[in-house]
Each structure stands twice: as structure tokens, then as C-alpha cells.
Image (cartoon, one colour):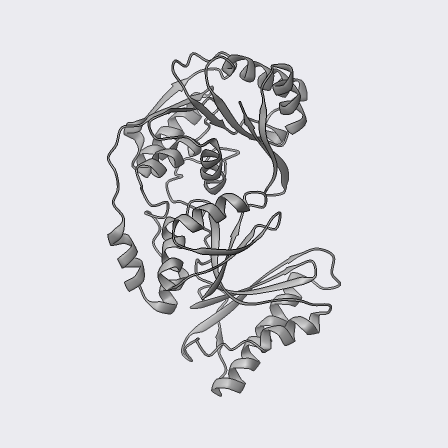
Length: 369
């Protein structure tokens, strides 16, 4: 079965490595486009949805093709065999459009929906029901510049970065899928001390704890779209094979604001990892960490901080304070010029520097030694 996953643009290789560890055969990585193509069976679909930490959605690939006009999208979708949909099931198109076109996403949804209906009438002699709110089957039609991707969504409208443990929501929370990718890039081992000196609502620490304890990232999720199509037996099989670990970890979260610290503790409790994270109220520019090995952090930037001068003071103070404490640092920021300048002045070796598209922001991830 041909599949593709969506992930954060710039972190495709991290997701590809995780997909391989779960048994998928990666065939193509679309760097910068947030897509990884692979092959696998139905069980892999369930594993990726339930266990993958860096993936946003899992799709069965129905078609990918270049196009020129809106009429081409109708033709491409209509040529797909949709007989796998039961006649009593409903469907919905979820369109996405990126690039310059003379049509809108609504236009894509309209022509693609009509194409599915027409194709099904020709093959099965029945008109499929449309249900935009709670469909049994979701067809994703992504128009990316001059290509159209058509996929059967096995995840659903709620993407996989939504873990369910975030009861307290920080004003600028980090996407948990990105948090997991940052931890993987740090090459942190479970017997090492990992610290986040600007921990906010605790996402990086919670993801680290869940990773090492083998707690499924979707443990709190109630449903997946593929269950509506193929039933729950495969999902239950995957769940039975998971063995969680009750191991001690050394995770330290430092946060300046008490309300965020309280929120991080609440989130950790909901995630089931509160007993393995030490939260401390403190200042990232005056670290008092002893024996820490790795720092992974998402410092304030953009709208999260008032003045550029404050960012320079924070980044410089943080890097200076951490320099003689830890072996390596992984950091994501939109203020990448300031971060790079401060790191170079302080003598850090920039081991890796990569662009990552985070929402509408062009951020950079640095791996510093």
C-alpha cells in the first residue's frame, strides 16, 4: 500500500527515520514540502497514527500528479477508483491550496467533490452522501504549486500533534510533534539529564518523558479516521503490543513565570509523567544546573517578547550561562540571526542549522556544541 505522511517542513528526515523504526519503507522525502512517501500495510497505518511522534497526518496515496488548470483536478480525481467506500458511508473533501493559482481552495473542494460523486456513480451506480461535519471518509486534495496530491485521510480532522494532555495552554505553545523532533535531533539518551530552561507549559519535557517511557503519543486520543473505514481490530492489536516502561529519568524544567510553571505541572500530570520531571522557577540567563547533559528549548521570540534588545539580552545570557554546563543544545527560534551571532561570539560550534516552517513563521533549528 502506498502511503504518505505530512510533517513539519524542514523536519522530513527526522520523520522518515521514525517511520523506518516503526516498520515503514520510505521511498521519497519531499524536503521543504512536509511530505514523506512510503509503503506499508494496514497495521503500519495504525502504528503511525498511534505511535509516531513527529507526524501530523497519515494518508493512503490515491494519486499525485502535475496539473495546469482546475479542470485537470476534476479529471485526476474522477479517474480514481473510490469503490472502497461503502455505499452507505458519507464523505468529505478537505482541500488545501499553496501557491499562485487562478482559483481558491473552495473551488478545489467543489470540483474534487463532484469528481468523487461522478466517479462513484459510474462505478457503483449510486450517489455518495456528503457530510462536511462528521464524514465517514475524508479525502484530502492538496494543491501544492503545480502538483495535486489526493489521499485517503486515515487520521481525521484532528491532527496527530494534538496529544490530549495540554490542559493548560501557554500563550505561545510549541507543537508537540516539533518538540519530539527537537529531542531526537539532540541525540539525548534516557540515562542523560535533559533540561529546558524556558520550558513554558512543559511540552519538550513531557514529550521526552513519554518517549523514554514508551508511552504512546496518542494514548489519550478517542478516535482515528481509519477505524471508521477498517474497524478497530488493527488498532487494538497495536495497543496490545505496546509495553510502557516505568523507568526513572532526569528531566529539569525551568520557567520564569509561576503560572506557566503550574500549567506545566498540570500538563505533566495529565500525560502521566509528572513524577519524572523536576520543575523549578528560575532565570534562563542564570542557570544553576548541575550535571546536565543536554538542553532542548524553545525560547521567546516575535510576539512573545516586547523588544529586540530584550531578545539579544536573553539569548546572550542564556548561551553564556549554559556554556560550561551542558555538552549540547538544540534550540528553535525565528530570531535566528541573533541566536547564531550570540553562539558564534561565545565560541559554540554550530553542528547543524536548518530551516523549519512553524505555522506561518520561518524558524531555524540550531544544534550547538
